[in-house]
Image 1 (tube, rainbow over the protein chains, first blue to last red):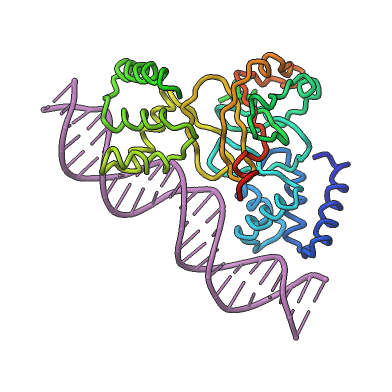
Image 2 (image 1 turned 60 degrees about the vertical axis):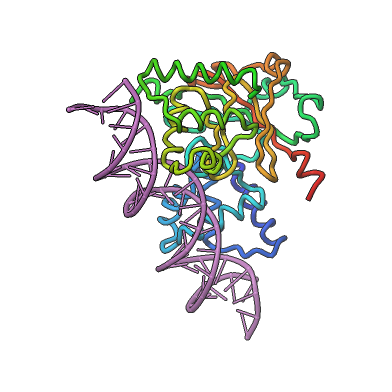
Amino acid sequence: VHPVEMQDRLQQFQSLCRQRGLSLTVQRQRIFELILERRDHPTADQVYEDVKVHVPGVSRTTVYRVLDMLVDLGVILKAPSPGSSTRYDPMTRHHHHLVCRRCETLIDLEDAALDSSIQLPGAEQTQAFQIESYSIHFYGICESCRSGV
Amino acid sequence: VHPVEMQDRLQQFQSLCRQRGLSLTVQRQRIFELILERRDHPTADQVYEDVKVHVPGVSRTTVYRVLDMLVDLGVILKAPSPGSSTRYDPMTRHHHHLVCRRCETLIDLEDAALDSSIQLPGAEQTQAFQIESYSIHFYGICESCRSGV
DNA sequence: CTCCGTGCAAAAGGTTTGCACTGGT
DNA sequence: ACCAGTGCAAACCTTTTGCACGGAG
């Protein structure tokens, strides 16, 4: 998330908290800020390691609880991840992912041309399932895995 | 998977086993058959509960090991799942999924019109990431969740 | 006879819960 | 002062690993 957006996102978060009568604790604020600053899609544990530095004594439990809360508020998303642990995605706009088969890295992809080209399945295909949104996973090998190792 | 395909799939599996010098044990054969028969995308535990009935005394460990092996052989796929545990998908052809936000059910979707409409992102978008395949998740509410409960 | 495959038990993550304390509002 | 939010420890769930037995080739 770009620095310009950061301010908006933080204020949005703060007003959502006030609206719902949720306390603006140091933990909540810092966890959200740290996720916004990251460009990857961290796991709960990665967030914990990160937060620990800024808020000594914070517990893993709190990190899990705050992440759940942020997802509830809709200010972050659970990212569909190939691996064993849940990843969190600060990017809430409609977008897609490049997924590396080898290292399981997730890379964000926004592509308006792609989205306007898509011919969504009609009711004959989806039966009574009502589509609200969609997201594409592109599988392949990322640059570092292809060159390095 | 339709009954017509079942035979083909089982034979393909058996010759793959022979090719690689893997024994055709009761457990392996039965686990694969049971996955083919299901129309959902079962977790390892659901497969275990299912297999237990047909192969008394089978262990969870074996189920996990056989599932891994089936994925290795390429006769089933790990399905990208929203929940905590891995789901397995007997449908190996290119297809997409309808994902229920509420009950997390996965429904297969094949749609040639959709696929031919998609304008894949170009190299400018994906940088050095080489796309090999893709899969779309359509999020929404499934019929039973919308009508019932 | 030699291994591969299995079952068991224990370990290894990842996440959730019960409970008592504490700090915001 | 009250109660939501926190930290700790223990429980829980899913998956993996070490090891010894047994059966197929």
